[in-house]
Image (cartoon, rainbow, N blue to C red; front, top):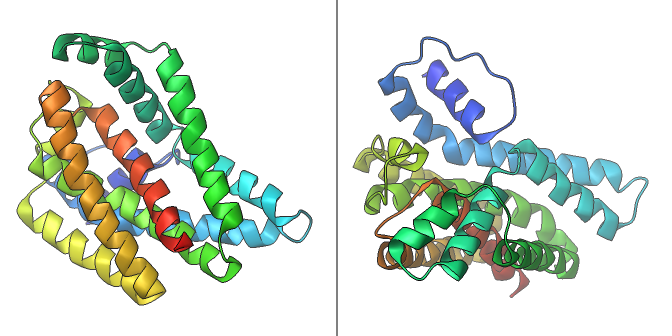
Length: 241
């Protein structure tokens, strides 16, 4: 169990965690911790926000929080979004899209989409009713990481790679347990807003799985990062209603 937690921490964050000797079973156990680690990241961001608000205005503190959330994951999810944007925007066939997504260079579609998503997050967080802000940040981090699991379980793999290695170890029990945990936590924490965000996250995961299947025949590792970004933005939007 402890080794599984360390594997999840190593994959989802920049923290240097020793995981030598981890087994395939440990990797499968790690998935149970994804929403909990998302919760911990969200709580760290909230604590940081309140600390920097002592010296800086709210708008600047939100910029620092957004920077922290990118830093703590090494920009993994933003990189996935950029690759998906370039692939879907620049490719005409499945093969072209997959080839472009493997290219490490940033194209025009990636730059525009990442910029728009960043602006959307900033606009949502700075426009939000302050009492909802902390809960929105934590909820988004929980649901964003929960989304990896049903997306991987209900999707086929577009090709062999990191995404396929991740998805093949997800089982039905993992999806059920993490879904119940994530739903219960966000609803207890935010009531109607948490319930709304959870429902929207489910719709986004289902829509993303269908979209990626039609465009590239399934999902890749980049698709998980892109889906995380969409769930995060949609969660903030739910808290604006």
